[in-house]
Length: 143
Image 1: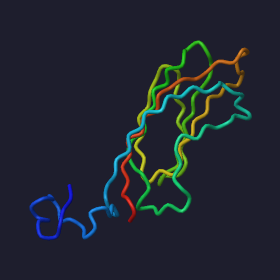
Image 2 (image 1 turned 30 degrees about the vertical axis):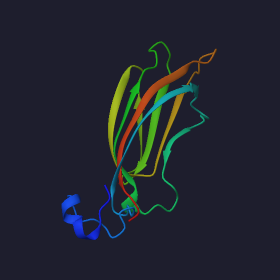
Image 3 (image 1 turned 135 degrees about the horizontal axis):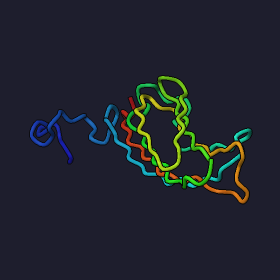
């Protein structure tokens, strides 16, 4: 809704900025659902898939916070483990999500999220880990 200075209290529930297109300080929501299908790899030298990263130099007060949920839909017939690594205010934490299970993780000021599917004895022919990752984040724009 466009606001002008004379009607700001009428048309906006909060005071309008002088420039209505200036979003600095506005809370923005991000909701993403990411399907995952990655090959089960040797645990000694896996290739990591990057799911989310904040741009280098992003001010801490504008980093995203919220909930990461993962549902591992992989079959229980293989010995592959899906590992989610999250770097945020608490450091880098890893979460092993077994086949046919799920996990919900709260994050604050997240800078990266990666995932890898590994096994000590990778199957031959290769098998795949499958999952759904949901990101429900909020961040403050342009502080």
